[in-house]
Length: 105
Ligand code: FES
Image 1 (cartoon, rainbow, N blue to C red):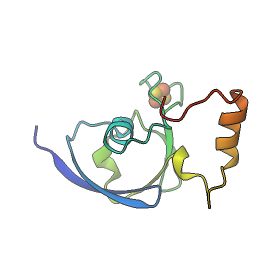
Image 2: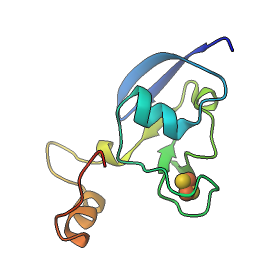
Image 3: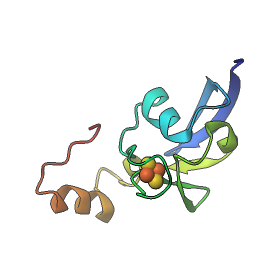
Image 4: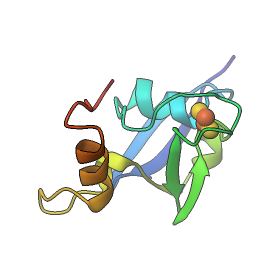
């Protein structure tokens, strides 16, 4: 299948990539951009492990195609830190799991 060039701003950085039209956003983030903070859980839109923000709206990235994000701004958990300081969500993930959470797992 022919790939489509998309331009998406992810965590403040413009990303231009050629993707297959069927590529789910979660796979685009994890496999193309190596942003593994959003996880693949159920892939049926029930668990929320894949949640990211698109243009300020929380969505489940297992239900969106990467091509649907053309021109959008995507924010993942990796993009929440500001000036090197972890966001409360990041702190919660780290502290709530007893320091055993590993980014990229
Ligand atoms: S992977 Fe469970 S809601 Fe997306």
